[in-house]
Every structure is written in C-alpha cells, then in structure tokens.
Image 1 (cartoon, helix red, strand yellow):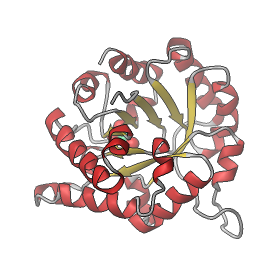
Image 2 (image 1 turned 90 degrees about the vertical axis):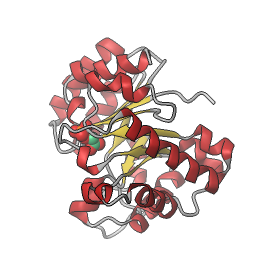
Image 3 (image 1 turned 135 degrees about the vertical axis):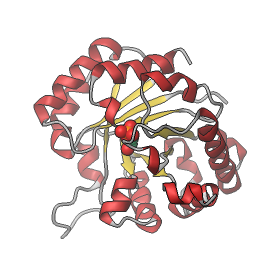
Length: 254
Ligand code: PGA
C-alpha cells in the first residue's frame, strides 16, 4: 500500500494574519506546485480567511487546530466545522495534547469532534501520545491503544480515507527531544495493528500515521524512512519556511 506523505505545520498560537500570509507565500515559492508530498499549514483561526486566499491556486492545503463538535449555537468563543469548511479548510487537528492538558479534552470529547469533522467533510488529524511518566512506566502501547479505540469509536469505515493519526509523544513536543526512529516505528506499528483490528487490514493500510514531536530537517529523513511513519505534524519547525521546507524535501527524497 503506498501512502502519500503528509507534512502538516501546526502553528499553534503564533502568527498574525499578515505574518501567516508572508509565511505561506514563502512556503509556496519553494514547494507550492509540487505534488509528491501533501503539504498542509494550520494557522490560528484568525488567520484562516487570509491564509485561505493565499493557498488558493497552489498545492498547499489549509488546516485548523481545533473545532467544536456542535453544529452551531450558544458556545461562546467556539468555531464549528461548517465555519471551517466555508474557508476551504481541508484538515483539522483534533485532540492535540495541549488541548487535552490545558482545556480538559478527553478521548470521548475528541471522539465527538472527530464525528463532527467527518460529517462536514473535514479530515481529522487525530493526535495521540504518552507522557514521560507513562513511557517510563512501560505503559506507552496501552495508552495509545486506548486513545485509538476510544477516540475512533464508531468511526464510519466508508470515511476511512479521510482519517489521519498523529503520534506525538508528549515528552518530545517542543522539548527538542525526539523519539528515536525505532521508538516511533514501534508505536506506529502498534497503532496500525489496532486500526486493523477495528477497521480491517485494507483500511488500516491506507491510514496515514504522522509522527510529531521536535521533528526538524535534521531528523526528518530517519523518521520518515520508517515503514509506518507517513509524514509529520510539525510545531516549532513549521514557523519558518526554511525549516518547514527542509522537512518537506526530506519527505520528497524518503
Ligand atoms: P513540535 O510540536 O514540533 O514543536 O515539537 C509538534 C506538535 O505539537 O504538533
């Protein structure tokens, strides 16, 4: 099964709208037309409208960093799937560890968001991963298995081609510590095994599993060479065109 690499930039709470457009223009000037690797940028909500115009007529896709599971209504401060679709957003990051840690999101809450995303033709990038304590206690595989099972409960198999998973060990996010290539591959293979149990081998084979956590141009090639690593969710290194493009180039030659 050949899975196209996806390199997605999670900009987190960085960049004003004009800074976002500047960065997208820079990214486009080096990789805006290539199609061998799928490229996506996920700016903050406030930059999505202008970013949407900036990515138009290029191969760069747009993603959001979160959304509410409800269709509409009295949810002050929240953003719905329909609002994202209206801005030509393709992907939405859901269940990022920072959402889980600072905003109390559970596998069950994220599951509702995943269903809402799929129901509105958005492609969820479902984030999972263990803490340092959990890794040191030997619980990593148990934790990610539960996150996959609970977060993807009742996921419709007919939408499986829209699902992306991101394995992000929490101890590697923004810390400069990366999982070794072997550590990443071990967890990715386990995730694919659970996906096969849930959705069958063919579906599991088609789902892209990204690695996230201090991925940068220097370590990207080794991680992307692993059999079950199908791209990256990039935080810090997605904030400059130079580093982000470096990772895309690593994916092109992996
Ligand atoms: P990082 O963040 O690349 O800065 O470690 C990744 C993420 O949180 O998605």
